[in-house]
Amino acid sequence: MGVLLEVKNLTKKFGGLTAVNDFSFEIKRGEFVGLIGPNGAGKTTVFNLISGFEKPSAGTIRFDGMDIVGLKPFRIVNLGVARTFQLVRSFKYLNLLENVSISCLSQRGKTASEDIGTDEYASEILSSVGLVDKARIPPIVLPHGDLRKLQIGKALGTNPQLLLLDEPFSGLSFEEQLVITDLIKKLHDDGVTIFITGHVLRELMTLVPRVIAMHQGKFIADGSPREVANNKIVLEAYLGRGDDFA
Ligand SMILES: Nc1ncnc2c1ncn2[C@@H]1O[C@H](COP(=O)(O)OP(=O)(O)O)[C@@H](O)[C@H]1O
Ligand SMILES: [Mg+2]
Image 1: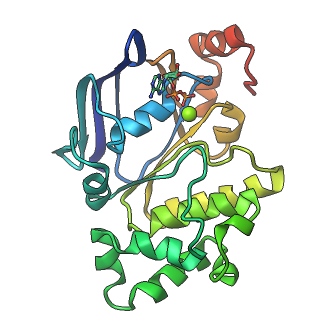
Image 2 (image 1 turned 60 degrees about the horizontal axis):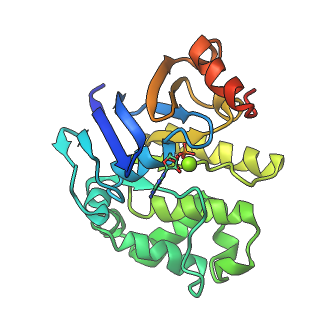
Image 3 (image 1 turned 135 degrees about the horizontal axis):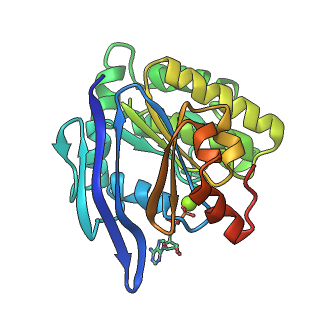
């Protein structure tokens, strides 16, 4: 399988703080990879850089062989990269169907919905994330677990090749986490390449076959969850902060 995402020497400085520091990795098409690190490690910044919400101070990002540094977020979406946000975001005065339909108006979303029309396509997506019975209600009345599903639905509307999920389990009950886990597994089975962050390794342990660990902006490990969980530098990074690890 070819490389879908290639990140080399990625660096992002915010004034005197280096949030991402000479960070390099590759993700192959079809992979399912976790990005872990304690709070403040730089995970969200890595996602912001890949999705074009932030511009790197140095380094390169290639998606499907193309240099995407400096492209606007919507252009990166049009190439096939979608992301969700750590804090849920929705159009609160639109219903769920409309929320997803907006993503279907993106270039790849339009191509994918050509045959059946936007409404039908958006409705299929709502069905795949388990929200089709709530298509006509606005997101403000939904419980948090449903809002997380909607985030994923909105990302899917753009028909992504690569889906970046930023802490999709955050704030969810155990039962809600199981539902989202099943949903993400299904998307991966359907062929979407997935890159997912978590600050608690336990959440990703049984979900992904490969984990990249970062700490203070720097790469520290890459391997199976078990290898990474036993990595001395990873353990020190977590223990040093007293964060919940396993
Ligand atoms: N826009 C910003 N301006 C200044 N500092 C930022 C900004 N975004 C992130 N940071 C800092 O960069 C570091 C990494 O943050 P972040 O990428 O959100 O970490 P994580 O997602 O791993 O918790 C933190 O110290 C954070 O405070
Ligand atoms: Mg984060």
